[in-house]
Length: 146
Image 1: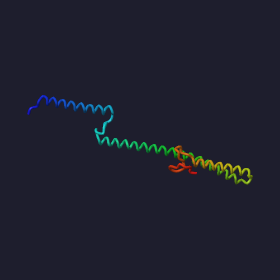
Image 2: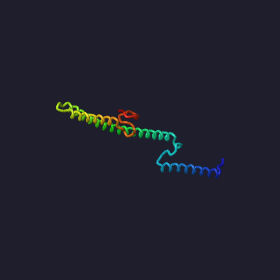
Image 3: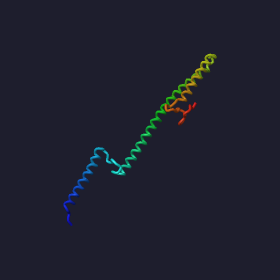
Image 4: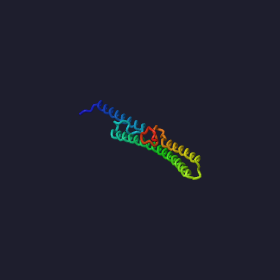
């Protein structure tokens, strides 16, 4: 069997071409900093990377939901604290109304203030959450709860 010079030359050129392609792929990996630039490079790794990216997206969405819930809980806690203060003032007025030395004018004044406190409680109960719904209206409530 005889090996011609042309065949030897073609084999050398093929080897150089293959090595040039490998070097180009390695340089691309180095510049991008990624082992898998295209899904065809490593289909299994590409699938794992896609699952990881989807998981990161779900985690970020969950974190945003948690942050929104924290804000709503803070708003609800603050509003309930205000309502407690209003109720405490109403309790004080009711106790003072039992004073036997008060006349009709004082009791009428107390009744007016109690009416005002009642209106304040309704306003607190109908507090909006800033997103178009009401803080104490339940999920998706667009009408005032009270």
